[in-house]
Amino acid sequence: MMFNHIIKVPASSTNLGAGFDSLGLALNLYLELQVEESTTKGIKINMTGEGSNELKDVRENLIWKVLQNVFIGEKKTVPNIEISVCNQIPLARGLGSSAAAIVGGLGIFEAITGQELTQEKFFRYALALEDHPDNLCAARFGGFTVSCTSDVGQVSFIQLKIGNPIKILLVVPDIQLPTSQSREVLPNNLGIDDTIFNIQHAALTVAAMASGQFQFLRESLSDKLHQPYRSSLVPGLKEVLELHLENIPGLLGMSLSGAGPSVLCFLDGKSKKIFHQIEGIFNKHGVNCKSFELQIDYFGRTIK
Image 1 (tube, one colour):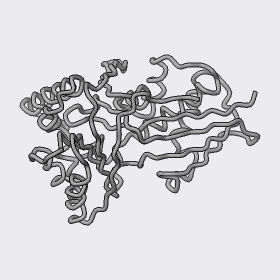
Image 2 (image 1 turned 90 degrees about the vertical axis):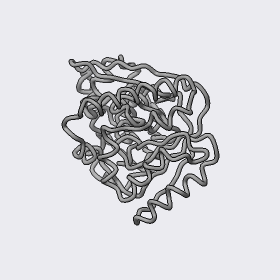
Image 3 (image 1 turned 30 degrees about the vertical axis):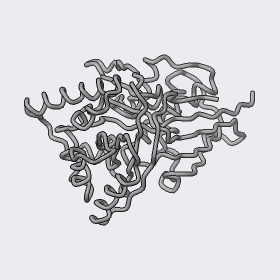
Image 4 (image 1 turned 30 degrees about the horizontal axis):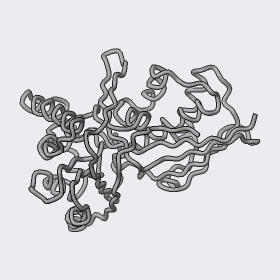
């Protein structure tokens, strides 16, 4: 039987300050995959958009990898398919591009087999390629998500509705920062005072987002686990993140997006002036950047 499906997966921003590997937010930048039955043997992937010139070998593509894993794991024959990829999500910028590819690949499996994966199976296949659930939860289910992993690898998560509408400005420096590199600079141990600080601030971020009391974000988005260390990897990033605690009109709060180097800003006013302040700092350090005015995606992955 011939088939033609479109799978759409949102970008995601995670950590949100102190919520390391736990808090996730789906954003309306998308990875779109159109999958059709093909007369050519195997899986063919055509890419346009962000990263289209960087993934030359199909076997290095996470969509290809997760498709191989799930078809073999579910004891099904890998079909002959052609996948047309249109990607809006910048790669290696802390925006969940890897998670989107994994979630999209699992969506292809569900679309062409008609078999909906249980949450247990979804996370089993997804975590085999990405070992933290925060981006995966936001990309798959949408909205604001809080997740954790048990000692035996079981994922628990809750999807929350944001208490009130909120404006989002995303600033993306023209520098790639792979998550693996960004994790290498993190400390192996954290002191008790810094641990307490992060627990308090992550909890306050969840409460502020869920209740819509966004005035608390200026304080709650502070972090002592990863942002102070990762900010040294990108020229100007430390100075940009220091704007977070300044009383800038219209800026509710700011954090590193995921592993960085992108910066996530929550606003209650116009974004243009705030972007120019951030852009000016990056430019002073020889770094170009671009901005996106975004909204929260509440749908997560969709299949048509």
